[in-house]
Amino acid sequence: MKMHKCTSEDLELLREISIETFTDTFAADNTPEDLAAYLERAYHPDQLRSELANPDSSFYFIYLESKLAGYLKLNTGVAQSEEMGLDALEIERIYVRSAFKRRGLGKQLISFAIQHARETEKAAIWLGVWEHNTRALEFYRVLGFEKTGAHSFYMGDDEQTDYIMTKRLEAF
Image 1 (tube, helix red, strand yellow):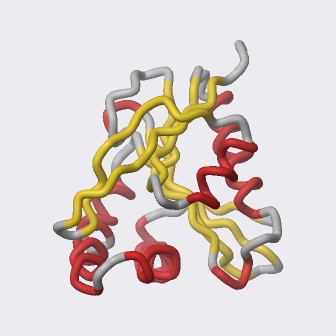
Image 2 (tube, rainbow, N blue to C red):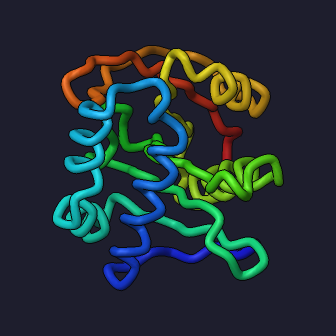
């Protein structure tokens, strides 16, 4: 396993894997129109370019056997999608390509995020999970995340609910 911090040079590859993994995960549960609207907004090159340039956001690719297997997006400070304070780190996106699922990469990405949070002296790590994504909810529960709230997530025009899952980190 190898991690690579993304730069603007990775924009097209980031866009491709983002669209691929999001579509694989959520297409069956949403209308094609809502999915297309979300993909256009969230993964438009200008949007990703802006996110890559934000000093409070960072993207990481994970490689397995020299193949791009997934990615992770972390936010701190004002880049977080909810006001969680300066002592929190958000995992905004965590996706593994279908061919690489069930090989422990999700746990590796979470471990990487926790390590990053500790190195930057964060007291908590959190993420939003769609309320109907039972596999993901269970995955995060097993890793010590607890439901601490909820927020709206818009898939096109469809307002959905994401549970906020938080993991408190030990003192430094």
